[in-house]
Length: 53
Image (cartoon, rainbow, N blue to C red; front, side, top):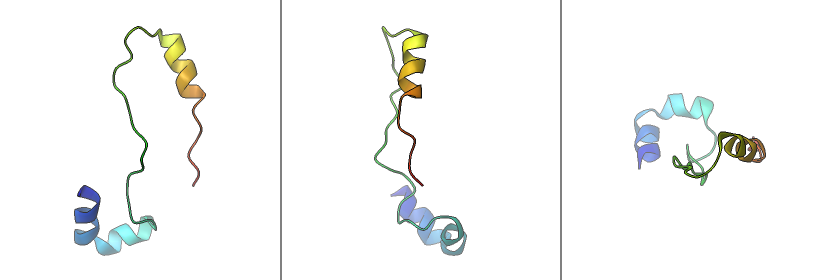
């Protein structure tokens, strides 16, 4: 809903920077990492694929 409302209010500004009909992707973020060491978490993040532009 946020993307739709922003695009509706700021048509010209948004069109200059975003060619796709959405701001966000299906990606997600998990704030909890209980039981995992910082080293394991860092390794996991570093091994994630980078998004294609």
